[in-house]
Length: 149
Image 1: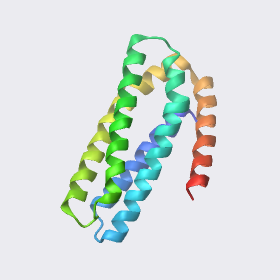
Image 2: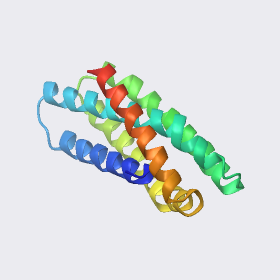
Image 3: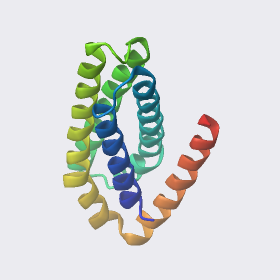
C-alpha cells in the first residue's frame, strides 16, 4: 500500500472513532474509545514523523519544509491534549470539550495533509518510493500495535 493511502486509511479510522465517542453514553466505553484514539494517533504520528515526513523533507522545497514544520507543531499540540485526557472524567462536560478540540485539530491536520502534502508527495516522490515507504510504515505500525497490546 502506498504511504499516502495508508495514512488516509488511518485518518478515516480515527475520524470514525471520534464519531463513535460522540454517540456513546457511559464513561467506561468512552474511556476505552479515547484510549483507542490515543493509541491510533500515537502510532500514526510516529510513522509520519520517523518515515513519511523525512522523505517529504528530502524534496528540498520551501513549501515541503513549511508544511512539515507545521505538521510537527500540530502533532505536538495533539500530544498535549492527549496527555490531559486521562485525567478528565469521561462523563464530565470537559471531556466532551477536549474531545471536540482534539477532533477539530485532527480534522485541520488531515485537510492540510490530504489536500496539499499528499498530492505534493505523490507527484514528487513517485509511486515506487511511496510504495516502499508505505511498506516501512505498515511494518512499524504493526510493531507498535503489538507493543501496545
